[in-house]
Image 1 (cartoon, rainbow, N blue to C red):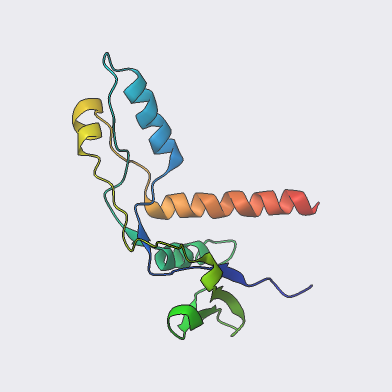
Image 2 (cartoon, rainbow, N blue to C red):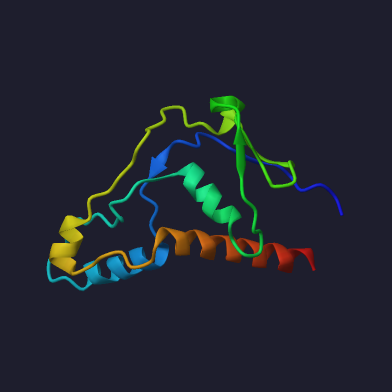
Length: 141
């Protein structure tokens, strides 16, 4: 069995309003049911960092690894419990005009459509990891 590749990421502190596509599709469907067209923001209203996303992803039952962080900024790496480097920051993945926090306000969607996000951040991350692991397993067969 070979070494696992090191995951390379950009700004771990960038915060985004991570939502679930299933919630957003439901919101789009509700918007299409309206008598008059309108512009709606579909969001969670909660900003979570890339670092939080990574930590939840690595806690997935099929991975079950705690990340131990070392270094700062572009020199930061993540190691697993056995001390193996599993993640590193790569400046190549920083956005040229990085915005520290992107956060949506879904008030109008709630008021006009009766829409609200239902799927939690943790569930979204776990479902994404599960899907990626399933795909990787199928492709390796």
